Length: 302
Ligand SMILES: [Mg+2]
Image (cartoon, rainbow, N blue to C red; front, side, top):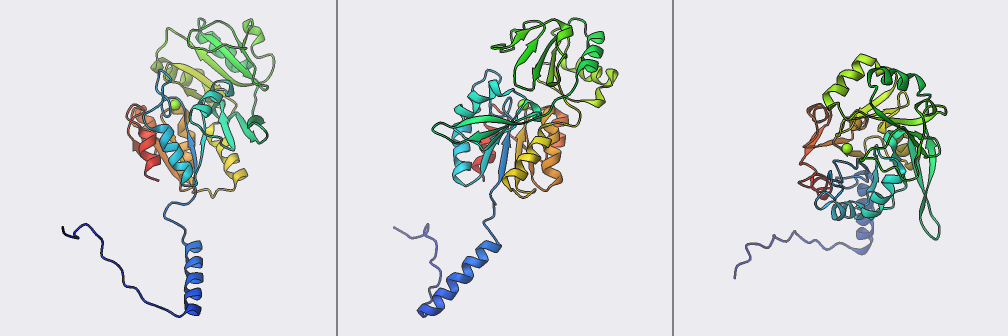
C-alpha cells in the first residue's frame, strides 16, 4: 500500500498560548475582510423552462440543488410570469420558504409571514389602465382570447382556453376586461405563431408597455417600465444584499430585463440552453437545458 493519494501535511509550528490567541483573532479579521470565494447570494429562478419542464415536471436534480444552495447560505427565490395562484404549488414542490416571491412578471411581490403556518401576503402591486392597448390589439387580433389580472389577484377572461387554469377566474364581456386597472394582460391567439407576435408588437407600437412573449405564443403585457428586474431590485434592497451579490436564471424573453439588471450590477445572469438566441445573447453565461438539469448544474457549483 502506498500513500500516493494522501496530501502532504503542512508544517506545524507550536506557538505560546498568548500568541495563538492573537493569531486566531487576526485570522478572524482576515476572514471578515475576505469572506469565502462565494458570498451569500440572492438567487432568483424563473419557473417555466427553468425549474419546470413543459409538462410541469421538475428539471432533473433541481430540488436537491436548491437545498444545497440554501445550506450554503444563499437565499433562493422565484421570479416568474405566473400569477401567485399557480406559483404557490411550485414553492411547495421546491421545498423552499423564500422571504419574497416575485409573480406576474414583476407586477406582484409576495412576502412571507411567519406564524403557526407560513403564509404569503401580497406586499407590492403595480397596475395600469390597459384599455388602450387591449383595444389596439383587438383591432389586429379579432380572434384573440384575453385574460387580465386585477390588483387583488382575481382574474377576468373573455373566452376559455385549455392551457389556462381558470380556477376562480370570472368570464366577462370584452368591454368589461379593463374597467378596473390591471396588473397584466395575457393575450392568446391560437392561429398565430411566436414570430407573428414579435411582428405585431412592433407594428402596434407596444413600446409604452412592457411585454413578453411566452413559449406557447402568448403575449404578456405588464405596466410600463415594470418587469422582473424592477421587483427584484426592491427585494434586493429590502433584504440588504449588495447589488453584485445576485444570481438569476431564466430561459425566456421575460427574463432579459432581470439579466440586464444582474449584469449591470456585477451579478450573474444565466440562460438555459434551450432559450431563444436573443435570450442567450442577453445572458452572461449559458447553462445546459431545463431537460438536462441546467439549474442544478449552476447551484451545485456554488
Ligand atoms: Mg421561463
